[in-house]
Amino acid sequence: MKTETFNLAVLGAGSGGLVCAAGASGLGAKVLLIEKHKMGGDCLNTGCVPSKALIKSAKIAAHVRDAGKFGIHVESSHVDFRAIMERVQSTVRAIEPHDSPERFRSLGVQVEFGPGSFVGPHEVSNGEKTFRAKKIVIATGSRPAIPAIEGLDRVPVLTSENIWELRELPKKLVVIGGGPIGCELAQCFVRFGSQVTVLNRGERLLERDDKEASAALLNVFRSEGIKVELQADPKRVIEAEGKTTLEYAKKDGTLAAVECTALLVAAGRLPNLENLNLDAVGIRYNARAIEVNDRLQTSLSHVYACGDVAGPYLFTHTADFQARAILRNALFPGSKPVNYRVIPWCTYTDPEIAQVGLTEAGARQNGTAYDVTRYDLKDLDRAICDGTNHGFVKVLTEKGRDAILGATLVGVHAGDL
Image 1 (tube, rainbow, N blue to C red):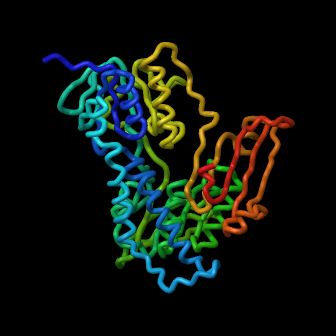
Image 2 (image 1 turned 30 degrees about the vertical axis):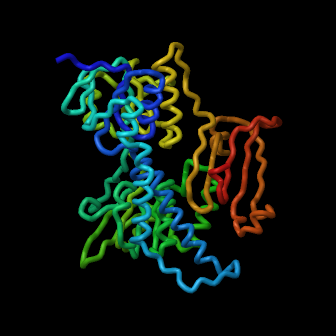
Image 3 (image 1 turned 180 degrees about the vertical axis):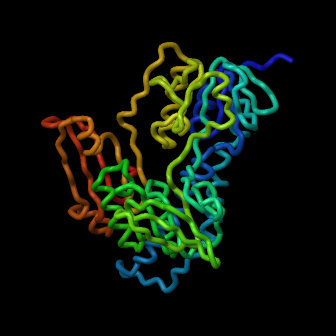
């Protein structure tokens, strides 16, 4: 039987893959989309959507807790954790149709399920059938990295993928990792009533962000009762007499221990490369990503990669941005390089921390002379009225000029700005 041929085949139906598939089909291309699990990828199922729903409940819990400061006295502030998590899942279900196979088939995309892999330079399979495509996009996403800690494999471990299955609030939660995922979830759970400890190997929280923003978040965390241990190196997990204890080395090298009823690992992510059969077709990759050029082409020029599997930024909006660049480069003559100079990002803690362009550390590293313009929200009338005057705005400009190099925002709705 003759192998069916497509203009574009997409492996992975997460944010980047869906944009590629819908965009190419809308331009008249014959498109194949292969997904091994759920449509919508990490963003819909285990990332952006469920986390934002959880964060909303946590913010309401904090508002109720602080209502007395505004003259509103609430007699009961009971947290129904099961109801919170059911609402999270109902939110996912409400958005699911936007990314459903039915919707994409209605857009003209041929959707197939199964483990996508390369059979040849222009051939891909879903484990049952083989398809041929002139151009191919790898958009298989990433998964939580599990660090090599003695005893970790002998206890139940929560990650950003399975934490949504919880229905009972952990009494004592230990979070390994002080990046965006760890910080967002740590604050949620302390607001629901868990005792929360964050262990971070780095010198500060959110190490990619502005140093002053990290310090501001650390102060907020400690004021809310989150115990934060910086430069803490987890060594061993011990389970004895019905108790789970995590031993870690402190900054000075001494050993300490913390007991937990739940352990959340948020220590980075790994690209989903397994079973793609990349070696067989000569597509180069490393431990962090598939290697791509500035046109998002792999070592096979007709094969592209986008999203978490390509890096360098693991954001939904970056995957979208890259997917649109691939559509232009793969389907039209005259390819153009991608430019990441103005990629924004936000960590949805409270206050939110948003960044675009260079931080001060980045400017110094590049040898770029700069001026800083800073405004503290404690001086902003509206923020004072709302009781949300914790934070600041910092703008970096070229030395002696008005050209903006970057901006850091810490405050309520910083991500909206």
